[in-house]
Length: 143
Figure 1: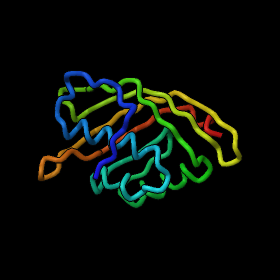
Figure 2 (figure 1 turned 90 degrees about the horizontal axis):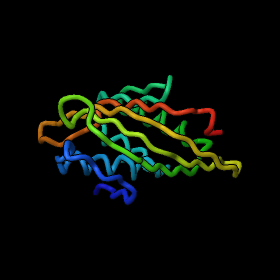
Figure 3 (figure 1 turned 180 degrees about the vertical axis):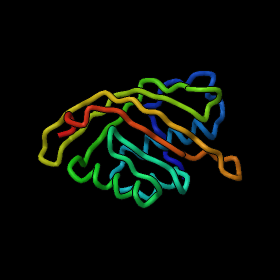
Figure 4 (figure 1 turned 90 degrees about the vertical axis):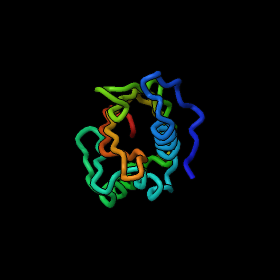
């Protein structure tokens, strides 16, 4: 069952597919949970890509491995998207920007701005999946 994200910004009229809306809400909710690597990767196509700055993972196992590495020293994250909008001719290409608060495993906290690009692809049943995500952030602020 998809997680509902309670801090979703109002979506523009160009994102009117309830399945796309649900996917994005579930993505942000799951992004804040360190233990749900399988739930996170299930949102992707089998050959999906997940990248942050210069780190890139392709395929579900690489995405799980990368995600585990991202959580290894930062056990608490709180993503707040401020804006999500379409990029391109339809709602299968999206962009977002927002803010994240981190808590490092040593106890100190940091926060940061981020931006992301998403490519979605519908499966044979018409359910949107994440084909590509590229996140840009200042990774030096995480530590």
